Amino acid sequence: MNHHRALIFKAVAVLVLVWGVVFAVRSMAASKKVTADRLDLEVRALRFEDWSEQSGSVAEAERREEGIRRIASMVNRLDFKERQRNRENRSNEEFFRRLNPREKNLFVDLTIVESMGKFMEALDQM
View 1 (cartoon, rainbow, N blue to C red):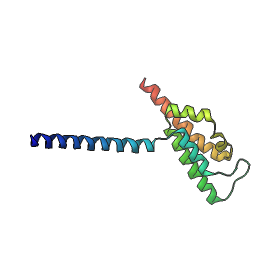
View 2 (view 1 turned 30 degrees about the horizontal axis):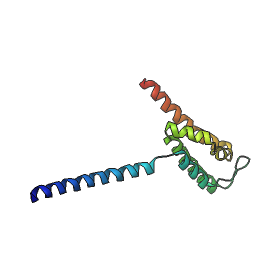
View 3 (view 1 turned 90 degrees about the vertical axis):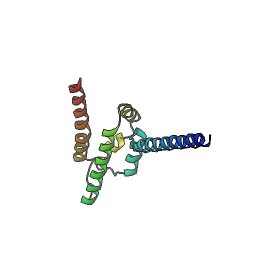
View 4 (view 1 turned 180 degrees about the vertical axis):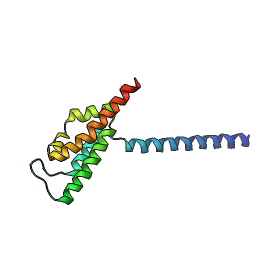
């Protein structure tokens, strides 16, 4: 009888451990997921000055390009539903307006070209 209880206790302990690992992995994956809200927070944290008319220092231009690449990467990782939310809340339009023409071209190249590539791959699979 004690042997059965010990076996049941071990089985329950293993199940609890497995579910704990599953919960931890799901939590980590959820924290890495890009959402429209997370993208909005990242854009606000950049605090870009308005360079639509002129540019600043070389060091600032490099910092901005790094930020643009990070934002573009996040945009490319948005799923369809989050892309729609991002488009609807329109909060990132101010970010785009503050970019100079070279930066706007970079952002469009990094996002639109990537999106079109994914779209073409999806069509090819059909």
